[in-house]
Image (tube, rainbow, N blue to C red; front, top):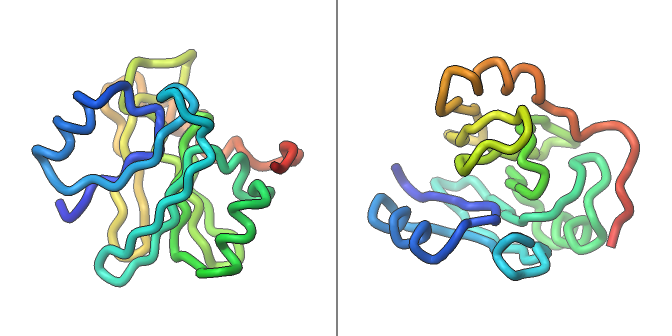
Length: 149
């Protein structure tokens, strides 16, 4: 494993410590981490340029700060969190990926993580129930735009 990327709602410093024991970690804090969820981090791994944020909110309608960041330095992948809904979509040559959540189950959402290799990305369900939930909940963040800020 080259690096772990965490898109927020971490759950405490102990989670980051445990992840750092596995591999280097790049992260942004989410709204459940006592932050506003608007932080943006960038990392390049194996030539793949990644923009990491917690609140996007939607791939087709990112908030203003994300649109500006996309223009300033175009990434290959945007990884985001907040909704805890799995997403994997390419828009105008940029992959938008939400790995869902590896934490406690919320509603009927999947418990999952993502693996990214060579600009491709897949979801890995962490329990049997999440296999179906990934299929049911994938790419639900299209449609009507959320307000941008």
